Amino acid sequence: MHPVKDPQVDEFIEGLENPEQEIVSKLRNLVFEAYPEMDEGFKWSNPSYAKEGLVCYMQTAKGHVNFGFYRGAELRDESNLLEGDGHKMRHVRLNRTDEIRVDELKLLIWDAVELNRR
View 1 (tube, rainbow, N blue to C red):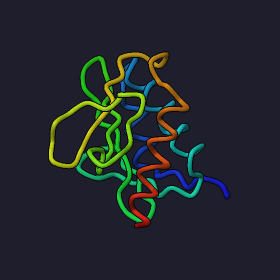
View 2 (tube, rainbow, N blue to C red):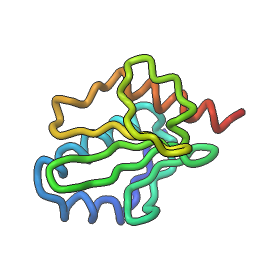
View 3 (cartoon, rainbow, N blue to C red):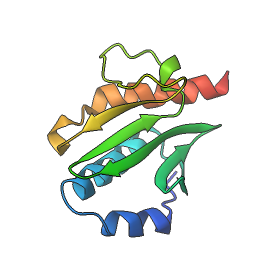
View 4 (cartoon, one colour):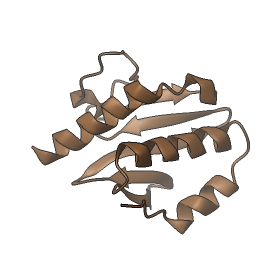
């Protein structure tokens, strides 16, 4: 199955500066590598991904991107990547593309989808 990419997210990425543009592009590809059938959309002004419920999102700021998980507080974060102290949400702060830990982030994505299936 091929990913269905939302044109709004394409426009959002095109409007970003680097390093945010490169980080968001790599994260987007990573999400679709983890689950090609992930639903991509735009929620709360951010690219957002869902599979059987909300999974993750990308929030940009000057010089970095937060790759967040809607139910991050419930995830098994064995690599201690997640930050935040909200009731449910957690995120990974990324300043450069070489900080993207592909295998660990895929595990978090898979775990987040599994939570939605319960």
